[in-house]
Length: 150
Image (cartoon, rainbow, N blue to C red):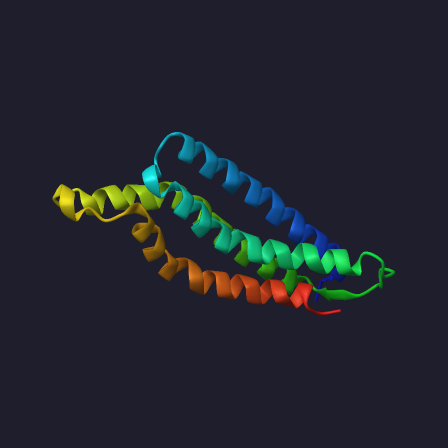
């Protein structure tokens, strides 16, 4: 059973999350500047932040609190690190894809409706929650192993 350093694993998870989040933010910014979110742009940003900021805040907060503590030599099974990283990537990939998939699905669903019955874009994003919320729960659960345990 391969072991990895617990504290280095925390730092690696946070680094991966920050890089992926920056890619997602830039992607959403570009899509927004292209006008794809229309009048729902502010609501789409709020929708996005509710999924990205809580895990990032948790990870950054724990590292800030523990920065003054001397690093202990604690190891954890590498499987748990790979599981947390894999769940995080899956969750972050779903969020990244939502920038393209949700507006496309929105156009498809509105194509057959008359103009007065058009569904607002934010409703399409909120319907995507049924996919994201369970994956967010599992991802956060695996991250909790690293960021709630000493």
